[in-house]
Image (cartoon, rainbow, N blue to C red; front, top):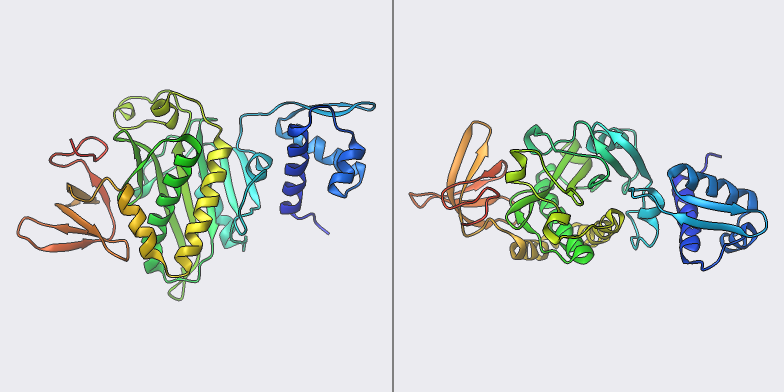
Length: 339
């Protein structure tokens, strides 16, 4: 029987946790007793951890000792201490990918379970909404895509995007102490500059979502951006003047998102929207929404229960906007914030 990737990840995370907590080297026999596995199985997992980049010293007489942890989004780092019930992987980690969303969609079409997670240290063709390129330099950001299988109509996709954004704000606040703002529909800001974005894509069948992929791109430890991107983009590290452990932020996002996703599936989006309003930087401002070559300007009144943005135009007419991106408009700064 082929080994279950989740079991393998859980075993590696348990071994890693034991090594991190140990004040002295741990014998293979002690680890085997703790996990209820053979010493040969422990040896295989130790070698797997070494292959991932963990510095582990092994001695026949003294046992195993952890010397160093790589700064990567590795499955054992993500799953160790992860407090989720459903979002449990499997986790697919890569040094580089064209796009985590593209691979997650491919896995979704092949029947991968809900909770499948794709992470990469860098992307060569990372993208945001409307096909725009997302800068994805190696080893500094979060590039992650989560596969979901909600039994919902496609019209509820915008609500999931807003739910995802609330989860990111919660997670970043927990892990870094920074307060993010949300620009409708999918941008995450700090100090008026863009720090992250959400790309939600789906496959439908008979007016139902067959699967959807929630992609998160977050600038974490970036220290510089090429011009002209440096005028509008920033990172958590630049905002806080500190370096952050990326797996910790990812764990926090998975935990917060699972709680909100369950709330959403139980038809409680109104509570999520209430929280979204607390973090938004769009409502109460004059904005311009770009939909390709078309532009719609107005005063952002509210976000409706289905995720649509309500704009009041100069003649007083209130229109619903369900897609597009907010561009800087009169009285707006480069990130869409009020000046």
